Image (cartoon, rainbow, N blue to C red; front, side, top):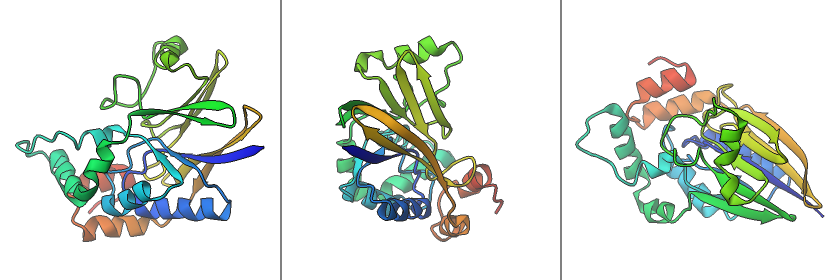
Length: 234
């Protein structure tokens, strides 16, 4: 029996990218989504995205560094980055208890496979992107305690598929904040205890709607975010 699942990461409060993705999985009869974290912050629609992520039974969710950073905010810090966190937390305050219940890692068993869900490098959830400059051994050692050969991670916004020592590492890219400005994700087809096919998908959506929401919602730090993530200057 074949299972087809979607892998997403780094939605970053982009409701327009998320809606485009939801249309795709509906049309393709995909009823399981593994969400690797960072679904709040950066984008202009944290409440709308959180409602879907937590309310849609197709989603299995873990925390990313953007969720974790909301748990303990130094509100005496007057930086624009903290202002953005405070604003985000206010938008999703009614969901904070549910978000805090999400795990930082999860092993999902499907079709005879154990799939590890993790957002970023072990012990570095709030750090810079997961980059292993030392060697693949360093990469491998971070995940060996989980006793699985299939590691799904996000955080870098870079699509990646690496096979090393009979282990498979997959990063689907970013759904809501990709470098190519599309909605990036992965479709995995599982059969007989193996990954039969891994397809990197990239869907276009209307970025102008996202920009309008930043301005309409008066998102803190929007000038920096729009310029650096969307190439748009206010």
